[in-house]
Length: 177
Image (cartoon, rainbow, N blue to C red; front, side, top):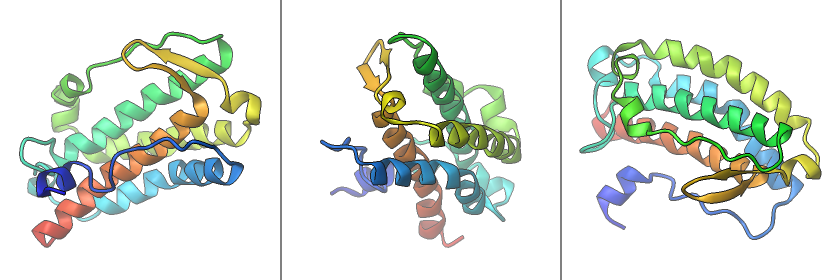
């Protein structure tokens, strides 16, 4: 495993399981519930220079990573709501790289997105805790990657939050912050 790969995927890539259990789904929901506090802890005490440091060569800054997580999870929450209220909706993708270059992602304090994530994840996990098998089996269609069940999407977003938090904590460790 190369250093570049490890910097890009500090916890490895997401792999959907062959079988979804209630225990697995509940552990993923717990990850989603805990993300705002863990992401907040990862950036606590970082100064402006540190927040503006890329987590890897050619990567986003810590600030952009935090804002990206908020952007991504807002989109995911909406996709979950669409899948619950429509039959197999086709969702709209977005260009996350271009979003990360917009002024809000490059300049705003990270607290703006951390506060947003607190509220968003409270709503999202309340919704997820209400799911039974029927809701987890609902799906949406992504124009680029095809159909995705909500049970797979829960796993993906559990991984996504841990993945980006690890970008920050791995950088901090490497830099001795």
